[in-house]
Image 1 (cartoon, helix red, strand yellow):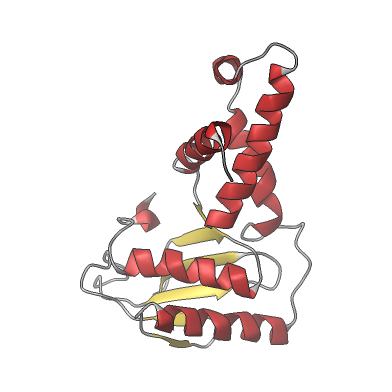
Image 2 (cartoon, rainbow, N blue to C red; image 1 turned 90 degrees about the vertical axis):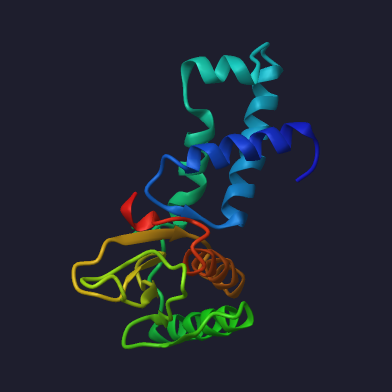
Length: 184
């Protein structure tokens, strides 16, 4: 992404993402920003500026929602993944987290990520590890590895590249860089 329109579009999409109940991989934000740039360009051909859009609709949020839909947690648009595909993605996630200096291992149904000193509290006593999953019928999500924990969807591709992006997001959470997004 280059140019002032793309930079402005990325900022608009990123701002829109803050009001959603999901976290977004950089590739999803970039895709939405490219779409938003295209829509703004089409509007300009009809005398409509980006500010005109802002007065009538949340175009940035709409582009993010449309682009994110196939990757979302429990998406009905995503084809079912096999157990082998899930295990492969989990293995890549563990390796990517370890490359980032984060302790991770395969768990019963997901990847268990060790807490850091700045990880927001989670679980009954606030000391639960983090459970990251890729679902067979949907996208990525994480929660405290505890009963009845709030789930935070992560919108990212179900691919090795997506697993690497998820690792970056989870690492930021473990390091306390995102705040307690599980309370959004």
